[in-house]
Each structure stands twice: as structure tokens, then as C-alpha cells.
Image (cartoon, rainbow, N blue to C red; front, side, top):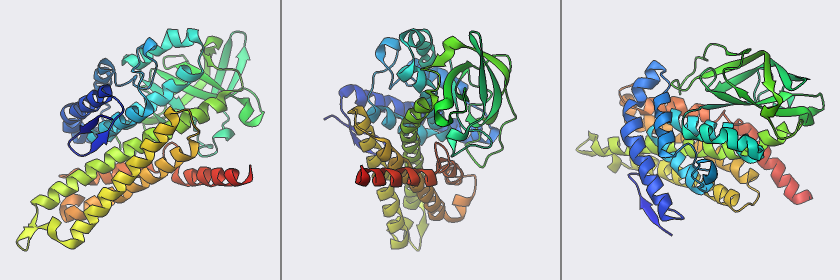
Length: 390
């Protein structure tokens, strides 16, 4: 199995091609993403140009089939590339993960005609996707959504509001879950909505603690007419599409969390090596050295969890519980590691002159998105119960 040694971690990868991909991702993140991250986060400037570049490099299509312009890469590789992007700039890592989520329905549940028509542009960098599931009154209770789509001839007429939508207002298409009947989860349908459709608009951006370069907004549907040819899978099958996408999406967030935690660890170690107190580097004081050791262990453990879950997915084995565990452990680790990174830097860590205060603010979002960590614990507990009672 080929090995790749990056700036922060050595990885065992399945193929020489994967080694080249990781090297390319690390170089792109270091040269194109990290240098602009602090400036663009402060200005809340979404880096759409970076997506064009990543599309050209093939990074937006890694997990999708080669016949549609994708990379045909296993999730084991895709997620480690995503980690490197997030280590350079979390906004970009999360945006790529959400874009994968938005493409998931077409790629995995669409007809051959739908994949031929839309997927190449979706993964080529010219189109940016959003994923519309949550609503103002239904976040964790996704099956409680009320956005309504009424069939009129060969169109669905959609009314309702989606909330907390990454890329809200800037996406070119939205993978949207709507209610087509009152039959609970079986009354939900997935529509691929063109962002330029009349009747589709976005509210002003949410004012967030962090990840400010990534736009988050409500998306409003006011009589939007969506052609039936844009329905993904059967009417009433949307909740199945949504849950399958979320299992994969949780792994994406786990990888992003590990990338952010690794960036915080790197910054803390560099500072501890260079900061002198009482005549020696502060890394040589047990209080600091042990803290860094715990941080490094947490990052490595979280990485191992998401890679193992990805390998299960690649093997066609059940991976829902491992994905929830990876998301839970990785995002909790990111919060702890970024908190400790601020502590290692002391007063300097509390200033915007160093990146760890931004990492600290950004980590909190990861414990909430793609299902809160309390929901992940529910998923894990239910799976454990099911394993004992089946």
C-alpha cells in the first residue's frame, strides 16, 4: 500500500493515483487557500473562483463516476482530500462537502438521462450546488418538513422556506426535499431545482460566529414551478434520498473537522516550539507538552474513525452508525483541540493576529451541521439497540 507523507501527517493510501491526489490537494490548499482565508473570512467573501479552479483540477468530482467526468475515487481517498482542503480553509472544505451532498441525489438515484444531462456540469466546476432539507420549524426533525409541492400537469408548484442552507443565494442548483403528500416520511419527494427559477429567492445571509465566507441563508419558494423531469427518483422516495445523502455527508463533515483540528494543532505546535519562557521553549514544559500530546492523539483517533467508516462504505457494507460515530468524535475533537490551541498560545491565541481564534469559532459550527451531535448519539444508540433486538 503506497504511503504519502504530507506536511502534517503520513497516510497509507490504496493507489499511487491517490498519493498524487493528496499531494495536489495539499499544495492547492497551502498555496491557493490558506493565504487568503483570514482576509476573505473577515470580509465574508465567498471564494467562487476557487471552485472553478478545483473543478479544473477534478476535485469536485472525486467520488463520482468517470463516465460523467468524475474521478471514480473511493470515499477513503475523497475524504482525505477533503481533509487537506479544510486544513487550508474550512469554508472551502465544507463547501465541497455540501456540493458533494447536493450532487448525491442525481449521481445515486437519478436516471441515466438525468445523470447524462446534469452531472458533468455539476462536478466540472461551472455549477455550484446547495442542499435544502432543514426548515425554520424542522431541523433535527427532518421528516417534519412542510414545504409543499403540488403537481400541476408536468410541473410541481412549490411553496415554502428552507433554512440554514449553505450556498443559499449563490448556488446554481438546489437538491430540495419537498412534501408531496401528508404520508409522513413517505410523503417527501426530491426535486433538483435550478437556482434561477422564478419564485426561488434567498433571504439575507445569516450573521454567524464563524465560517463567514460561506453564505448561509434561507431559501424561499414562492410558487416556483419545477418540471417533473427534475424529480429525482419516485414521488415519495425523497426521504430515502435525503438519509442516504446525509450518511455520506456526515463523513464529509468529519473529514473537515479533522482538517480544522490538524490546522489548530499545527499552529499550536509551531508556537510552542518558538515561544521561550524561563529559558526554554514552552513545549518542554509538561503542562504544555501533555496538552499537545492529547490534541495530537484526538486528531489521529478522529481521522482513523472516518477513514474506517469510509472503507466500509467503499466495500458496500452498512456504514450509518460508523458515520455518525465519526462525525460525533471528529467534531467534538475539533472543538476541544481548537480550544486547547487558544490556551497554548495564551493571550496571543485570543487575538485575530493568530489563526487559532478563528479556528475556535469555526469548530462550533461543525458540532451542529449535518445533524447535531446529540442527534448523532441518538443514531448510534438506536443502532446499538437494533443490533441487540433484531
